[in-house]
Length: 500
Image 1 (cartoon, rainbow, N blue to C red):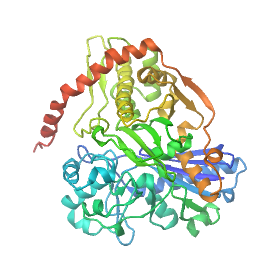
Image 2: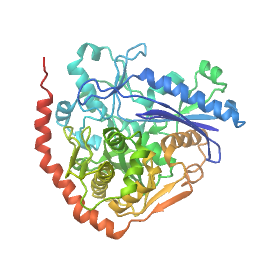
Image 3: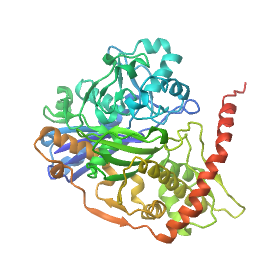
Image 4: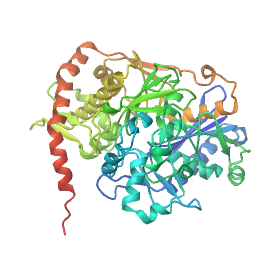
């Protein structure tokens, strides 16, 4: 048995996988995000560990009822939300709440980092507030006394690794999202670290995702009834999610419909297109890279609109949307609730419903939200295609993949078949478990450990609808962003005003 643990933004998920690759048990525990100021997004790492403990313990209890003993677990793999800044002192104590991937406070520091000689060539990316390095530059400027106390900077999943093993380690895929890694060389860049006042000693050691980084601490092994279990390096959530559905070879692609929305394509070499805000990262496997587009708000937009319209949950929103269907003259939705990455790199962008009329209904707002996220994903997919990587078929994972109505709409918008496979909803945790399997069986092949799961459904694009989205809705969607962009900047200045 192999245990995969995924530290997401909204919760921790644990998956138990057998040697044949089948998921035998799943458990999760929810997390909350704090927004103490506009554009700030933080979590307490102590909450991560509490959620991880509870998810693992629930998983073990569930497995025991099925006759699976904790002693059968042979290795653990980790995945998690990328880019978060977890700051520790010399005693390994957390210095402040972790600054998350969707935090937008460090836009000024991004402009400064872009002036570092060779920045884009080394990192393969634009400097964006979501990445880790600008966050540390912000802390250095605004919290200098705290900055001086920093001994180690960890990514979120690697804080769980520290609690599990006592080791400071990370993997190349997650490290590539910091802007401190030389992505082509898969090693820390002293020049990039120096640009934020840090040294290599402040960083964990970088491993490939299928390498062993340490062993479960004896006290945890005793509490959970496990042995001296090795812990694999694992991967950032997107890379691990790709491995979970077998996206491991050049030209394969997937769409992840989680809190954020990601289009991910595998490359056998280092490709970069930073001017389009395309991310170029290491994959969680040796000698493999990937390019991806990221929109900050995907399934989170559905939560937003459900709350806005008084619906109890996203399932109710989807049901309401489907009951009426997409109307040709319905309102448009811009999904930039916390800014946007690909292709705009605009931290000030905001969401909007445009084209409302007196008869607009809750279902219209629901459909507009689903469409707006889809059109944002189309922007990202087209940006990735400019690197030369294209795929005729796309796998879909994440919580949003559960909706047949939405995935069909996305196929119509993107104009590509979308394939849903078993295990897509637990992709990152399953990918972490697969990396754990590879870590203890180095002779195992990718075809053996990372097969493509069984196909559940294929959503074929409907040509008439695809033309409607391409010829009518996509131009309007893009025009609205261009026209509202100056408004966003003005609104950002107003947001700085404080009333007595």
